[in-house]
Structure formats: C-alpha cells, structure tokens
Picture (cartoon, chains in turn red, yellow):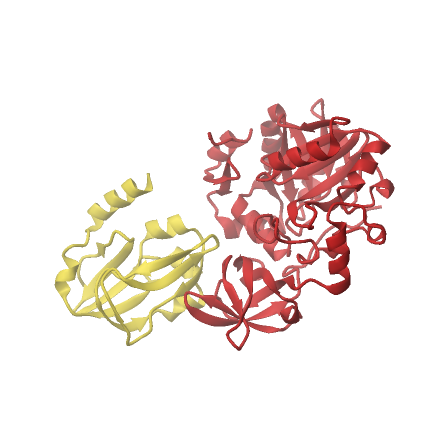
Length: 367
Length: 126
C-alpha cells in the first residue's frame, strides 16, 4: 500500500523534518532541533503539531442519534451541552478498547476525533452499529492541527479572534480567511492549547502564519515525550483490545450517571470491574537513576515473580529523568511501591508513582 | 597518538602505546538524536572485537555500542554516564566511551581511515 501524506508534507520537508511511517502516513518524527529542544519549546512557548492523520468523523443527526450513541459510549450525551467535548472509548462487549477518542457535540450532530491507525475500523464498527439512519463522514478533506503550550492562546487568537474565550474541552466554529474552522481548546501534551480542523487547501498558509507569529513545528517524537510526561495514554501502547478503561485507570472518563443502569457496549464488564477492581492497573513508573525502561520491559517483585509490563518508557525532558507507564497486578499499584525492571538481562529498581509526571497547565475557565 | 580509525558500526578509535580510546562518531550521534542514557563496560572486564561493549539510548530507542578491537577495559568515561548530552556535544573528543589495553594491534588494520569512513557513512545514510 502506498504511504499516505498529509497536506503539510511539503512544509515538513522544507523545515528539515526526519520522517517515519506512522499508521500508514509519512509523518515528521522530529525537525532539525531534535526531540528535547522541541519538547522544551512546547512547554515554554508554542508548538505546532500536524495531526491530520487522525480521523475526523462527522455524524449528523438529532436526538435519535444521541440515544443511539449512548448505547455505544459510556457518556451522558443527553446532558452534554453543544460545543462541549468528552474523552471516551469505542469498546467491544468485554469492554476491550477498539480506540480512544474525543467526542464533541456540534450543531449538526457529533464530531469524533479518532486515532489514525484505528479510524477506518472505527468507521466500519460505528457504521454497523448505527445503520444507515445517520449521515457519517470520515472527512479526508480537512486537516487537523494542534497548537500547544503557554503562548498558543495569544498566537492563535491573533489569527482567529475569539478563541481565547473557549474553556478547556469546549469548541466552536470560527471564520478565518473566508472559511469555517472548528477549534477546540484541548490537546494531548499537558499544556494549554487548541486543535484546529481546517480544509486541506488552507492549512499550509495557516500553519505558515502560526510560524510567523512565533510558534514552531514539533514532531511526533516530542509529542510522545510530552504526552507521557502528562500521563496520557497512547493507543497501541497503554490501550488495546485486551485492556478495559477500568484497567487503564480511566474511570474518570466514564459518566457516573451511566454506571447505575449501564446499557452501553461493555457496560457489564465495566460495572463488575468498578465494583471488584481490576486485576491489573495502569500506573506511572519512575526507574531509579537514568535507566530507561522501554515498552515490553518486564516488571518483577522482589521474589522474582513477574507482576507486570511496561507499555511506554522514555526520557522525560521536563522531568529531566526516565519515566514510564505500565500495567502491574493491583496489589503493586500503590504509589511508592518498590518494583524491579528487567533491562538487558539485569533487574533495576524503580518506584510506582503518581501521574502525571509533569503538572498540567490546562485552562479550566476563562470567564 | 595514532591516526583515528573507524568501524562500520560507527565507532572511532585511537591508539597510544597499547591503549586504545574508543567512542562513537559524530555521524552516529546525528543518526541517534538526543542521547539521554549511556552504559559502559566494567573496568577490568575483557571485551572481544565486534562484541557489545555498552549501550546508548536516545529519546527514541536503545542502540548497542560495539568495540572495534579486543582488549581489557582499563578506563571508562563516567562524565558521559552522568551527563549523556555531552555525547551529542563532543562525540569525537571529550565524550570518549572507554579505553582498552589491546592484545593484538593488527586488529586496527582492517578498520577504515577518515576518508573511507566518511564515504561509508554517506553511502549508508542514503
């Protein structure tokens, strides 16, 4: 299959991007300054991320659509206000996660942002569940740009006036350069920021404008270190079809009002696990010293029994040390529990720790 | 001190008497990106030509460091373990990895000189 390119591919090239293949797309892993500089620039200024490979699924419909989606997602969508977003999951009957996603109620229905590697399968699953009653469009004509970091609000507001009035996890349509953009105040770095849905033919000029105002392009490498410091899950690593939201320690994302009656796919398993607890739980892990424990590193207790596995591990530039996330048996999930990580045949000490590794700077409310 | 020689695994080596100093090349650090972890062989241990003799990790991945010659490890550079970013800053100078007491100096013969290595690095990168 031919590798796909986003509408910003030429701009990435002219900014000396190093490319990797990610979910069938040629994506920039880093630019000339490197991952650590890009990471730190995002935390102190403003980073631009091309996330156009992600799926933008528009589903049009009225209250019937809300009712149908409540049979799928563990969310109180009836009480979700227009232009408000929620983090959620597409699950199977065993509460295994097909994908994690952001769903926003818009005037016409819903907008769901899906992971690149999962979007086509998600579309198929949702089409089967919803039938042909609603208009569904996995929109390939729109790009998706994230702008993240403390200076982002000022920079973006100078181009799209009014975005500074958005609260965290809300969005709206704006008009800029004679076209409609959908902007949400959200992101995946632990910083204040926005995601902008914009048509493919306008995106290059738009991003060039952001760069002129002082923001810089940031690759997927820094996106990974930023999200890991923020304690956020990445599909295919922390989350997959064999993990449930309860095991992933994402109970907060399940609406309380949906837990008493269930009625969504996977609700039985979720309700059982909420009551009895899951046998394995996602935790934060800090190796002692500078050792980096990568994905698939085995976790042991002091009696040489394997008690879990690392799902993501790297060096955290803002933490200035190694960080990781992984799953451990629940009796080892308490903060400050001593564990051992097997790296290159030797066991190294580490501690279970609280998430996030790096404190968030999200804007809760601006009014 | 001898002429600097290079291996296909992107290590450089110089010889002074029978003690070789070994590190990774600038080209290697450019391919690896920001180095955030370094592990060196133990002092007093013996390493074999083309065997692993350490590890470097970037933000992205771990890579083995090989030794281009055999010998006994007589010194290691603790400064790069304490601050691995030094490897990116001065890979072919102060950020050497380890020193070996060589057994068989003829092992140097099969290694590349600067000109040959630059050509090799350019070809292997493209």
